[in-house]
Length: 267
Image (cartoon, rainbow, N blue to C red):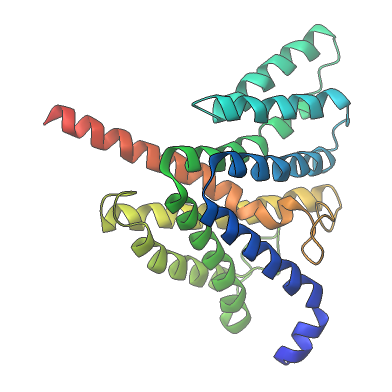
């Protein structure tokens, strides 16, 4: 298929993609925490709604109210990730008290709640440069895997997603680590080796984040998690890889931060 034919058949997907990139670039350029909190919160609520369907949960208004509480708490809490854990605990206690406990009702407060909060926590703790690093590594992993798989793919990567190949995943991983290692150097990671290891972990997490979303959709017999993004599906369809990558990045960058501080104290 020629580029013209490919563009024609996926026109809506390309247009949506360009609009998303421009919006993201503008948000990152403005670099305002309230704006990031608000935009990310809107995406979170759509993603939360999609997760309810993927997990086949009972869509009770209280769940959406609690999701809103999670995000409000994240905005006023120095440690956003704990907001989801706290609200999930409260909900679990309430459901148990009412003798109507269904473990599935807690799942949306784990995924995608905690990963979305991890993205916000990365921005709060490490700034816009870390977000750019995260996005570049995840995007290159996805792009490299797609084109690498098209050109060299022969070995199926997983029965969960038969169209993905091991060769494509390796190529995507290699490209993302090679470029991400240089982007992450400096104040964020401290040195090239640390940047390389963090980029590798983010890229690998992104691969399995995409796989996890595919698993959820196949399990729920759904083609897409939603329809909010023309040509792309839902919020989780577009952000699945970055959600896993964000968890890994926040953990490792915070670990490096604490290691540096501890090393300074010991010295």
